[in-house]
Image 1 (cartoon, rainbow, N blue to C red):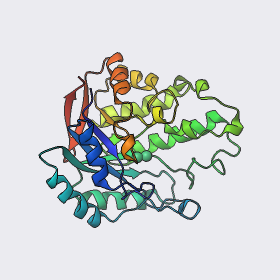
Image 2: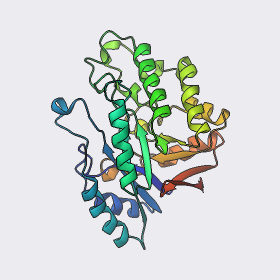
Image 3: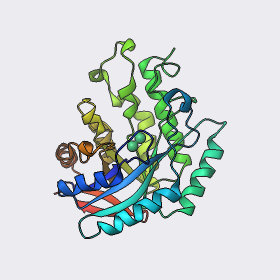
Length: 281
Ligand SMILES: [Zn+2]
Ligand SMILES: [Zn+2]
């Protein structure tokens, strides 16, 4: 059993309408010991006009809402206050974005920072055009993984979010099926990403949204988790990436089985940006 969901969104994320308290109530109903809010902060999100979403929140307002919530529920559930930052590798914006994230995490007392690569080449690969235009599936995946590697080396965060989630967005027009996905084709890059996390004492996230999307695995695919363990990786954070109450702890029973099956005995929860190991029961 896993008793903490460490990737939870609320209405502070532009793609969620759920009041933070609703997420807390659902987690209590599920018997959880704690959750960590990790609302989206994607500085310079390139598709703001196209999506109508900015993926930016006001950190003053965020803490003003989260601290009283945390205090009022402290006898029922632990609430940690984190953020999911959208990392960027494009030369034209990376220095500015990095410095903005450093200012944010320096000024506010976040418990946990997830570093996720959502956008590259000035677009969100969720959109087929332009990211996938003229790229084979393999090129699309490798280009993304190279961006993740660059970002893992460049940015300060605690856990690397949904490492291979790009595979969700391979467009149907490519005639590709998720069963064609072989992480081992990309182990040259993936190993570098995993080694970077291990050498710097940072965690890898297991994100159960892959199961919610019907991919048949959580992100990253178990072959990558197994590789992480082989290379000496121990720090795993677990999150549902839930944007609605019904997503909280999504398929955590399956995640526990996957991790135990690979030999992991603990997962990690961050508080004040320090890791605490918790036994998978
Ligand atoms: Zn994300
Ligand atoms: Zn998320």
